Amino acid sequence: MPQRIITYSRNIFLPLTTVCHNRCGYCSFRTPVHEGCVLFPEYVEETLRRGAALGCTEALFTFGERPGLEPGFQEILAGTGFSDILDYCYDLCEKAISFGLLPHTNAGILTMEEMERFLQVNASMGLMLETTARLDAHLNSPGKDPEVRIEMIENAGKLRIPFTTGLLLGIGEDMGDREESLMTIRDLARRYGHIQEVIIQNFCPKEGTPMAGYSPVDPEEICLTIRMARDILPDDVAIQIPPNLADASSLILCGVDDLGGVSPLTIDYVNPEHPWPEIRELEHLIGDARLMERLCIYPRYIEKGWYSPRLAPLIRRLDQIVEERNNGNTEG
Ligand code: SF4
Image (cartoon, rainbow, N blue to C red):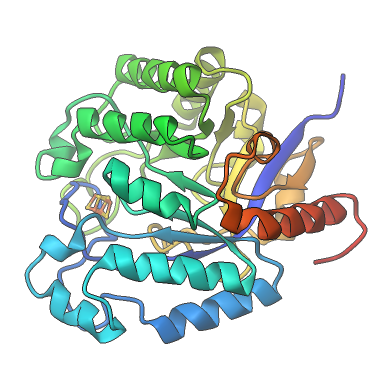
């Protein structure tokens, strides 16, 4: 039997703002508008510079959805020289490219036009479906309406954007809901061919949130969901787990293909109490499988040319670097 391959992306995580128009019952990332709720350009540029020096290939921009709808946010954002968070993010994507990192943006719900614009400066994009079920956890989160999320994932397919989505486990859904969510993603993947990976992420209850009293998802249930995902999803869609939130060493055998973005520099700002393992520790987590680095755009989309001409030279260069690192020719 050929040796199994488990992939990961070497990234930096840039949460441009913690302000968000949604109010999910499990979230400890979101904050009210306050001084310091926006990452300023000096910090972002310094992080990009240091990330590039450490051999990172991906700049992950993830932040609260439509923060501009929250009173007082625009005044704080004005300190960056921008009046719209998406314009600011776009500018930083261009900076990331100039530093030699491929942007991957997850800014919550975006319109077709916004995604079309971001495609020019992003190698891939993402939006967690989370679940197709209507849950109490999302009662105050208009952006978590399953129909709104499915529509955006579908629009990404129409635009041929290599796309990451996933399920959030343990927020009130049941196994039937998970099956339905996976079948929805499968149908979109079959129709448009743009789903490169599906994250199976277990929700970790956080102190101070309305769902602090929820029980963490049982590891066996996570394994069952991974197996179900492998059965339902097309073979070329990778199944990803975050190695800082779940026991990767046991879940790998359930059908995991990928460990997502792992950073040698920045923390997981959404789950700061769960540090990522060191990149060299990943090898131990995956047992007999072979660890391979990848870009945030999967190889088949590079082959198909699913990226903007602006990104072509950088994608070619980083693809070569990653290949050399995987072949053990450079330390990186
Ligand atoms: S959309 Fe994301 S950042 Fe906003 S409240 Fe929900 S989990 Fe938190």
